[in-house]
Length: 269
Image 1 (tube, rainbow, N blue to C red):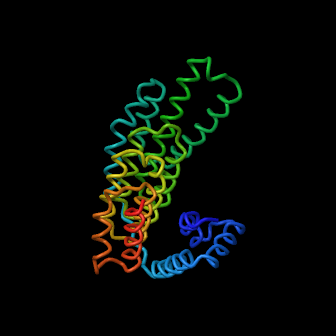
Image 2: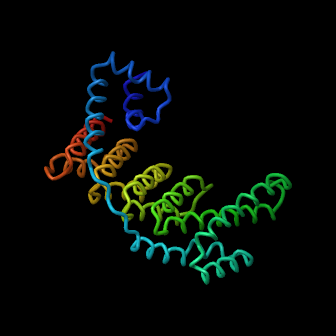
Image 3: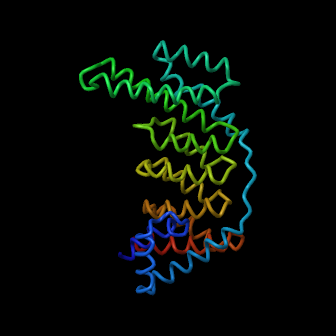
């Protein structure tokens, strides 16, 4: 194992998500490498400090209103191009109170249609299958967007998770994830949105949003995840924000230390 591998696996090590072999390899390398051992000790100390931070109380009404407007726009408009799907969406709007049940049904529909497509038809030669596949993708996207506007934090987490599984997600999904990062009231949902946005790290809008969020977020967990994000993407434009965090005495001690770590890595990258 090399030093760069140790740094990349620190978060998973602290979260206990490494396999036994990976954990053993990391600990073995740390024992033989003073620099990595020191980094591991600092990260462990930060982790303990972060564990003492009280959880925030979720309140998703504002986010729900924003997503209601979004669902009335481009995402649903694309689905409505199909007459059958358009009628389904219209009916769904009239029965908003049962949307959670409909989302479950929609998920089952996606699964069943996918099975039928896989069993009975050859996609490369069938325009009908191509159209059906597009409708399935649109439906999956709509369900993901709808879940991300729910009042329940667990449902919003499901929506973020769904977005990570979408094939060629549209701009609406990226915008929804950015909005979640910026405004969701639940720390865990915001953390999940950072992970989901990593697949879009090549987009300027995503990197800019990460820097903006780094300067506005107040949850130490989210700040730490954003620091890791800008370091992983080698976003040198974040250096100014990192320096501000490192010098701000009102910022959590672990975050200041992580910001200093981020500065060192970006300046030498």
